[in-house]
Length: 449
Image (tube, rainbow, N blue to C red; front, top):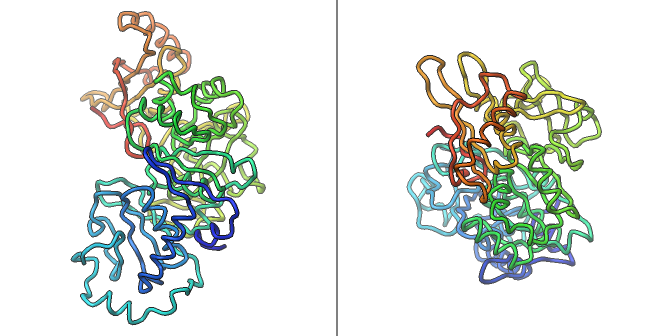
């Protein structure tokens, strides 16, 4: 498959990158990408670390270096690459251009040697560039997962209808979910609006002002925007959920608010790439998809009731994940089969141990969110000397609900929990809070207080 730049060069219709105060045509960024190749021919076939600065520079760098460099490492902003990149990298180019950094360029004459060995600036790699994405954020040592342009765009859609869309970017672009939005917009000829900064009210206003019609976000991000009570004014025609469990409550809410929109939820991860897309308006996915040969991936359930996935587009197995003898990756997502549907219960790595019983916070949150007055919920563990841990919840109520009314709401919560949860799964305490924070990837932060 052609590189990103070659793909865009072959297109008749190209979109724009739209910021709050200005916009750039993709054609202009393509020209700049070609200038970078001509200005730095010695980067060809080298490994390069792109430190995120802003969306315009990031997209330009992707176009310049895919199909030109041997490998691309996508690094978080404001983090020194020398602190996060694998130790076995001996020769690495930093972008944006920086002074030589100790530990990254151990050979002081690296640049001059590369320049000496550089060939024709129009040369292209015979094999696809390896894209490396980190699984963690800006703290700790990230674990890198390899992809190719093909694996990253395996679910990208092309059609005349998509040309008129204006996508919003809510995720950080250097993360897998954000990169998916960026590539979908670029390759389909749609506009891309950067909405990653600001509080929910400011984000919704920008969505309105820029006439955004397509948006992808985690269920937690969608709930934050819905709580502004202004999202309905955004002319959305294409809605995607991913990164967390898309429960029936959030799917129903979005469907009711945007009856004309196409709503999909995507199962994907940095390790496995894009798994599958569900578009029938129901939580989970059909049981018939297990062991199906018609999907782009193969799915099955392990003895531990974990979802296993095998993608034909994955570049190579990663040390981050576990695989079985047939090459299926253990997603660490616990599932159950109910009424011919495979439903997600939660992450095996995030389970709360209550006296030897396993509690999945995501499952409890889904039950709490069935109460109409609760707009957002977070369930986490609180250490206990007897039980090991207890289940505690925080909830955000509808704006029109007063705290004094929570006594009655709590009765409804308790009734709902008793009907659907076992005793050890029911929260021992429920706190009312004004808001619930998400982590940098847009997912709910369940770190204990």
